[in-house]
Length: 287
Image 1 (cartoon, helix red, strand yellow):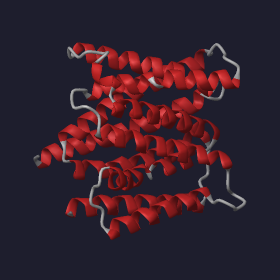
Image 2 (cartoon, helix red, strand yellow):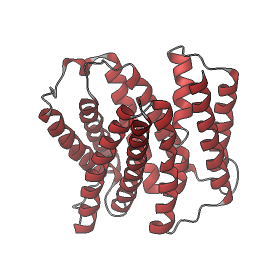
Image 3 (cartoon, rainbow, N blue to C red):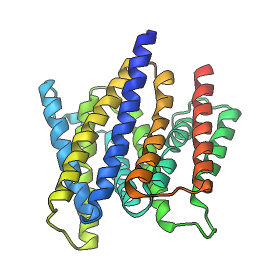
Image 4 (cartoon, rainbow, N blue to C red):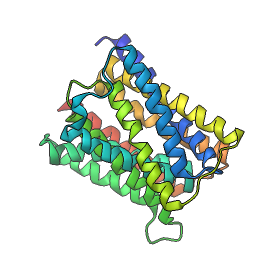
């Protein structure tokens, strides 16, 4: 990889994180009038169709036999859970705090890789992981007056995304990122249907909600594509730290669009999570 490749990959990663934050903003806006289960079904169907078209244009099979492999089935379960709980989190809690909690995903992935795949993780990285989890607790404030039980939805979503990323490492190499995108978005449909059946109501989205959903689908697909380009263009150790820019975009949109006012605990906890995540990546690169 050249310096130009790393720069291009880093820029694509920043663009992807900005896109995901904007996607969250549109989904949160749509959730004001549309049930979350219905949002997941519409968002999943739109994303699945977009990735299916892109996959077919590359001559790839949509229904590949490898989708029945154990790793893909496990990935599908984590994808459904992560999307379900995180979408509920951004609908019911401040976007800034949900975005902050999501930043702990790389720490969980590192811990999971050590426990599941036997990757070598030294005591310094284990200590950083524990400190990072302490940062999440600072954001959550369990047992204190500022604690919001609904914020645990963001934790559940973060764990789901971490499980998805770990399962992706074991996914059959025959499947491309576009095919994984098809299956990932497809899992939102049954997850949303189950939630909608539980909540017991569906609505016809008005023009504003429909526009938010269409924008979320378009930007989400673009962000996923940018993420794929980023990971395939630059060195992983150089590009991955720019994932944390999603927190900056998430907090900014929360403040500017939803008039959120993150408190000191949220900022301190976010700083701890990001700092420990960056340190973990740096130690992994040295190793």
